[in-house]
Each structure stands twice: as C-alpha cells, then as structure tokens.
Image 1 (cartoon, helix red, strand yellow):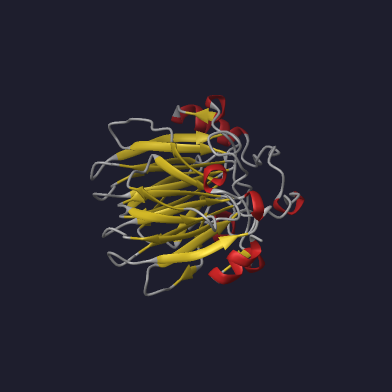
Image 2 (tube, rainbow, N blue to C red):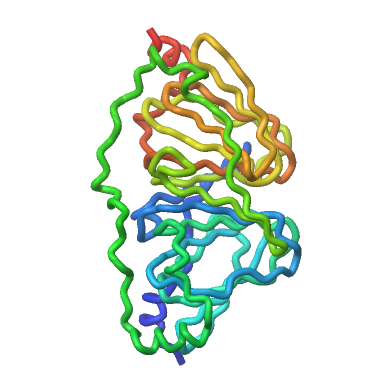
Length: 302
C-alpha cells in the first residue's frame, strides 16, 4: 500500500469554486489561493482528436495545474517509482502537478478542451523528455524541491492606480488580438506568457461554461481590472461601451482574444451551444472593483 500522506505531497486533485447560475456556471482559479504557485503562463489545448495522447515529459522546476474545461481526458503521473491515473471530466475540478513528476495526457474525448496554468514561462531546458533520465534524477533527488520562482508572490504585488475614467475610451482600452497558435496533429495549443503575449500579470483565471444557447451575461465595468477574453470553445459576442461610444465584438476562435481595460462597460451575449468563455484577469476578485449599475458607471465618467 502506498503512503497516502506521502502521495498528497506529490500531487493532488483540487476542487475549485463553482458558482451555479441558470445563465451558465462559473469557476475561477486565483494564484496562491486555489493553487500553490503564482501564474506565469497560461495555455489551452483544443482541436484534439478523440482518443489522442499528449505529453510524456517532466519539468525540473515548473509546477502545473490542469483542468478539463470541456470533454474529458486522463492524466497519468509517475514519481519515479509509482504510476497513478486521474480522470478529469469536470470544469470545477483540476489536478496540481508539482515539478519532477512525469506526466502524460491520454484518452481525450471528442471536442475536449484542456486548460493548463504554469508557474514558469516556457523554457526548453526545464523539460526532461527521456523517461529513463527522469527515473534516474528522481531517485537521485527524491526530496527534490521546486526552484525558487522568479514570480512575485501574490501578497507582494503593488496595485495600479484606479483608472482615469475620463480617458477610458474604446479606442484606447479595448482591442482584439490574434493569439499564438501552435499547430499539432495531436491538438493545437495557444499559450500566453505574462507581460509578453498578454500585457499584464495574470493573477486569476475564470471561465463560464454550461451556458444555455443564446444566453446573456455580464453588464458591468471595472475600476482597475484588465481582462483578456477568449472563446475557448464555441462563440459569443461582447458589447462594449465607454459612456459615449458602443461597439460589439464577435469572438469565435480559441486563438483570438479581446483585451478590455478598466473603465469600460461590457456584457456578453449570443452564446452558441457548448460555448466556453475563458478570461485571464489582472487581479483577484474584489467586489469593490465592480460598477454594476449603468447609471453609476455613466456618473463616474464625469
């Protein structure tokens, strides 16, 4: 029998918050709160053929958190002496994978969508791609600990000033972006590094799912939050309003994003069946940052 206490230090399944709503459910992940690391890179894998195999590597320093946003797949982990299998099929359930853990993903269902949060930026030198080398290193360093991360811890961030609503205009605060797309026969991948492909530090990731076709969500503004919205699956429209000008953006691609800065009123609508809205956010949830009444939003502009 394996030592359960020991195993819990190697990896663990984490249940995420699930906000149930008739308009579509929502789950969110905040760094250093729901997961034990600061987020440096976010990527998602899509267009995966049913039954496909992905992975087969370990990281020397990188930690990961993996969620099945839609569909299902298996995560197979190996610590150098024992293999364990986890089946992911819930959007509000994920698995934390520490460094020096060999992992692969397999048995993808059709139309699966996999979200991965990473503690470090992409670094080919951090990969261990040979299983025999991994076993040798894991036995040599059984108590191997994560390298000190360069990421600033969540409680060390300095908050930006409250947005100047007088200068928050659509032309300046919103833009659509073509995101990177790595083509692969076993499923395509889009990755976003903090302060690189995305212009802010991602501290929270949330997503809407189980959304009834044609539903409407949102209708609020933020004082300081920056966001990147992606239609990770399906499609929806985003209505934008800066108090003077209105514009509607249609999102229907997992490698296209919409950046929304602070001081912009936004609402989502026209969801297709099976749509998943993925949002990368610059701050943890803070109710005081929301403006939920349109009249107060307009008042704040003047």
